[in-house]
Image 1 (cartoon, rainbow over the protein chains, first blue to last red):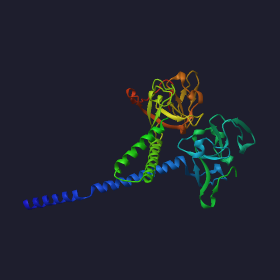
Image 2: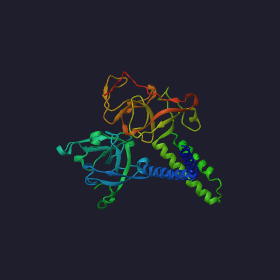
Image 3: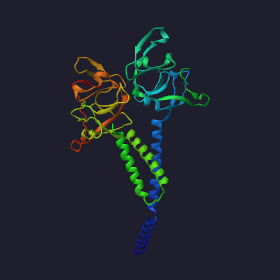
Image 4: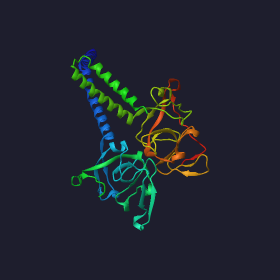
Length: 183
Length: 194
């Protein structure tokens, strides 16, 4: 019995001394360095993505033929909307006013104070309406007006919903190119 | 809006931490300048990320939320006489009726307003001062200031898209004698929730 107890005691003191010899301080500082590197990288990515340029995957029929039905990856710059210099003809990424969890890409057709004339229902006839865009809002329409839910349905969109201006397609490789004023 | 306050604090914290840990480095002036520049940029980015994603501090101006917040006229150092509030950002929209929220103004995207959320999408509510009942459209919300007589809010610009909402005010952190949690105040007699 005492032999077993002696072995257990020896094991425990041995374990304790090994435990204390592990270089905790250097492991800790190493872990802290790596963690701080990850945090720094995350902050850098966030700042660049929010204030300079980001990318977005845009798909759907509403911006044909500018953007593919099955999806293109576009580069989105954040500087122009933040400065308030979005112009008519820009393709912008905005938060949908009907669903705040959805972002959509549309083209700006009218700025605040403009009078916008649009086809109310292009599939069923040529009826048009003219609307004045209120202050602080923009009028957006998809390039494919036959299949696009845009300002003709949900009205002028507050400028603050614009998240960025899509200026260039970056993927797939056969679609690479700048997004121009109009197709 | 006191974003710079958060950045400044984070920058100072970062610089202090690094100088504390590296004070036995002896560098010449140029290296030291480069070192400080790197740390400043890191501090600014860190501050910006925290301010955009987690929480930030605002100085409340304007009397539209009286008596919940008392005001200042916004210029340094007079803003210290007004309320400074802690604003939490959120990723999923767990907004409730009665929360005080901050949002980008629908008439001027560079301004940010602080008002109370009265109604969420799908609710029916009675417009104040009139007998109209409106249904809040999907994706929109109705905001009003606590001080009805001096508040530019949804009674003037209509329901605002939820995409404009930027944060929720949780606490008043200055002045110290007004330090408290900002409570939800639900308006019972005008809103029918669905």
